[in-house]
Amino acid sequence: MSELRNRHYSPIYFLMGEEPYYIDKISDYILETVLTADEREFNQTVLYGKDVDIRTVINTAKRFPMMAERQVVVVKEAQNIKNFEDLQFYAQKPLASTVLVFCYKYGKPDMRRKFISEVAKVGTMFESKKLYDNQIPTFISSYLRNKGVSIEPKATMMIAEFLGADLGRVVGELDKLLITKSADEKVITPDLVEKNIGISKDFNNFELQAALINRNVLKANQIAHYFEQNPKDNPLVVTLTVLFNFFSGLFLLYYLPVKSPSAIAAELKINPYFTKDYELALRNYPAKKVMDIIALIRTCDARGKGFGNPSASNGELLKELIYKILH
Image (cartoon, rainbow, N blue to C red; front, top):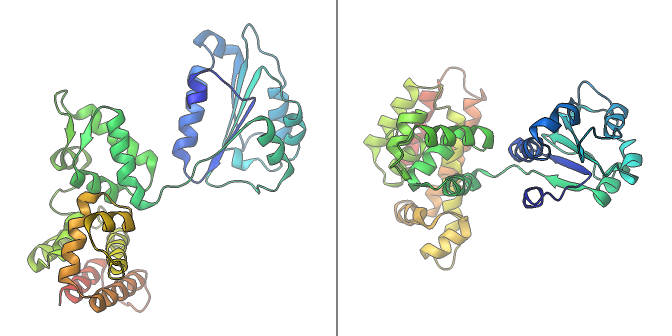
């Protein structure tokens, strides 16, 4: 993006990977900025991989621009192109006046293929990797900070746990928050998240985890009941993922020589704000119990998917799991 902002262009961009958000961000920026509005009419072409073969793409890339310094050719859904091999010959002598962009989403080609090495010599190869769940809170904070807004840690976790690692969806909801908040609000709070995204600030996976950490039986069961009444917004698999990640992280800490907040944050790669939850859980749950809880979560997950469970609903499974965790 720095190169693009400075108008330093490669003749070929091969954008690939599991996370489509960054691929779209780069390709959209190229479409919006390389050419002026007047130049785009004759010099900007968008093709779709399911509709073209590589020869059609190359022939388009070999055209010279009309009344402009360069042309832009963007191939969306490039993962649907069957045979890329001829691209190696174009890459050996690409047209300097063409900016050719491939958007290869949800994976990448065999990196040992000849066309890859030829493109890498002259162009820009970019792999957009899927973020892990524990990286999403940092992404949320960073995205909002770049917009001049901060966010409370609890609000961050509410969004991360509700939306998961789909960056396109996360950014869409963050932009909604930025639009709907008042101009004088510089901090995103749980109340704003609840009002504009529809996540309950009192009944969510973050609060269920907190109730279990504090061994608050009443609160944990209230949340489980709420989840049972609103199953579409609170799928069991998401709840189990949150609980599994917490307790498996907690189990690692029993083997940590020094259990200081900084050591815990470094070991688990979390915001230091959340280390107090782990410190409390270390006091409330012995290692053997945590081991048993991890096994219980795995069993609940299997039963939720139909293994060894002829009739229990997801709500009933969660209530049973909470009982076993707390007793």
